[in-house]
Length: 176
Image 1 (cartoon, rainbow, N blue to C red):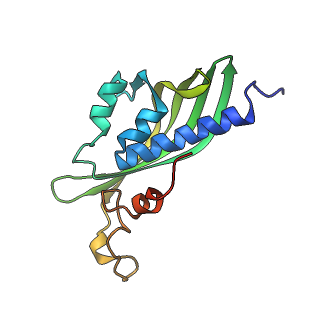
Image 2 (cartoon, rainbow, N blue to C red):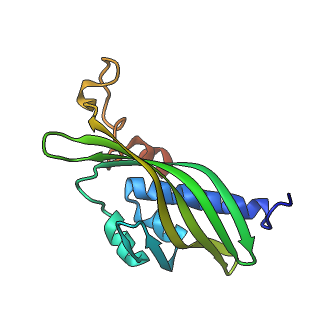
């Protein structure tokens, strides 16, 4: 089987964009998302379909009913056609959902069908569709106030909010 076209550098740039999008969504970081999507991009999650500007309004600052999300990326399959790359990436996303009776933990397994385009030598996402493979509700969420295995956790170790310790970790360095 011959490998699809596209250099290792192209693949690495696209994988870095995929990771930036996941991080941007989880931390509601507008700048990461703006650098990864073309302004004319279209996004379709089934439960949401819209322009990139509408997507930003949906993701940043995020739904208060979803205080914590975590998108974990799996393998990606690439097909290159000139200045376009079609990429399928497996994803498992965790969501903490605020609900009457207490927060609940849920997970979704699926795949992103992404169309990246290279314009002026730069890859960015032009179109994303989410396909859903499974969904799991775990019931009442863990109570992080109790710590982990009986040990309390200091601020910054739990969640994805403004106090997320990874913000300070990356704040001193320049993005690649």
